[in-house]
Amino acid sequence: MKLGEKQMLTVVKKVKFGVYLGDDRQHVLLPEKQAPPDIEVGDPIEVFLYKDSDDRWIATTKEPRLVLGKLAVLEVADTNNMGAFLNWGLEKDLFLPFREQTVKVRKGDQCLVSLYIDKSERLCATMKVYPLLQTDSPYKKDDKVTGMIYDTSDNFGLFVAVDNRYSARIPKKEVFGTLHVGEMIHARVTDVKEDGKLDLSVREKIPEQMDKDAEVILEVIREYGGILPFTDKADPDRIRQEFGMSKAAFKRALGRLLKQKKLEIKGEEIRLK
Image (cartoon, rainbow, N blue to C red; front, side, top):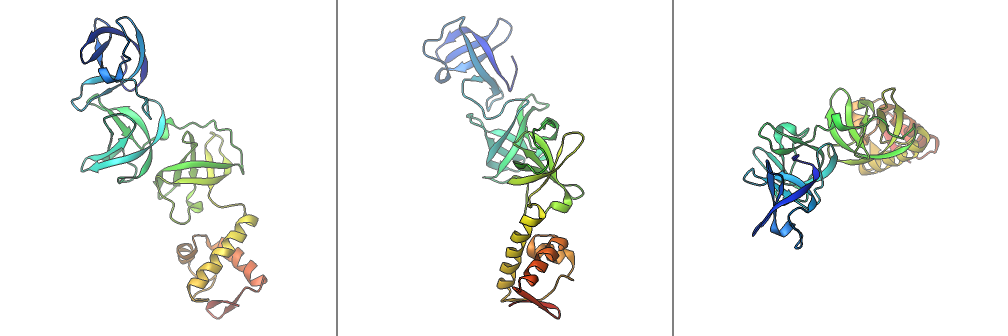
């Protein structure tokens, strides 16, 4: 019998509170409320095996949202000083230890996790899903994809599981705005590496993105009362903080707005016309 997996087991004994499955050497209880009313000794039945609150093996015919070797997005049902508990469709919530969190999660958060068996032979969740991600995606450069951010790195950017199964990242230079772990994103493939991993951008190709950036610039300047107290000579970090774009993207969109005579530069200010 295998913990954390769906498997076919045989009924070896019927009792008042359910049926026992397995063989002469090992058996596990399938509670009465989970057992079909007409089940008999010798019948096969597909079940999932996990441990109850007392660490006893137990079988269920319910469909768990996560099994060993797979990935799933689960919601945080609760937290305590040791970790978090995830709703995975069974009576006992799935434990996510602090050490297995790529960021600290809170009740109501969504997180991409896989299942593992800890040193105490208990099923637990981990957000460190990189080893299970595939590198044989069907996507090509400029394809549009959807995925969840599952980890972050100050040096390399944000790591994304496209379709919750393919390995991808948003390089640091492409990280803008308030993207965070647990967020589902829509992105564009900018490169397919030799090893099959994907590079992504949440921004459009330059011509399409320039129009969007121009609208952002106009909106921010309106929030400043029509006068922005700095120009495209400002520090790149300030531009990124105010507009959520690189200095190069800001200058491209600003140039378009100046050409369209929607803005003008006066001294150290940019003004609406």
